[in-house]
Image (cartoon, rainbow, N blue to C red):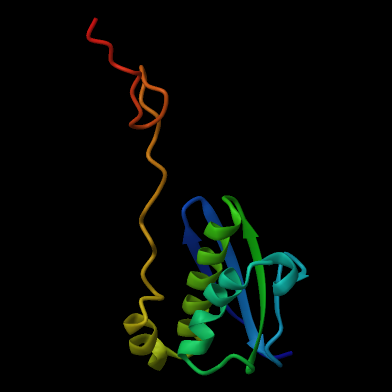
Length: 129
């Protein structure tokens, strides 16, 4: 069996564990094909960004276990995980992936709700009289 490279990607509340192995370019997420799991073309494009940046779209089979968050967060997590797995495979890709901004974890998280308010920042309507 060929060697598999792993990478963990995170975005918002989503975590994606990515396994990269030599193959024909098949991407499966939670045991489903990418076009079935991410039905929006924009999300499929987000997932394929690291492969396009390194011109390796048809060289690897990618198996992903994604959990938590919504589908947009999961797509970002998968992208981050693929970039990290590519880096584990070939350290010379670091500059290419870094320049494309694919190795940086997006730090934005949901702000927690505050007591005495409806949401994190929304206040109740102010009445002067």
